Length: 90
Image (tube, rainbow, N blue to C red; front, top):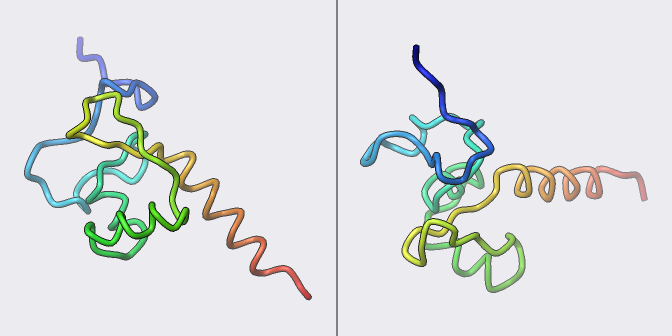
């Protein structure tokens, strides 16, 4: 019997190493720098700028300092609120 990893378990982080970011599922709970950049449509090095400007939330370092991860649910909620806020009539 095979047990699939829990999407909410931060220790069950993402697919195969070295795989292109677009090959990992968008439903993965914890996103690395490449996955987040792909979602936002920016290059990974631009995330530092966005973080410094408060445009994206701070990452979690639950896998260690060298492996920052962003919570997909938090990212999607933040950008959904921005989209709804921007689409309201003035």
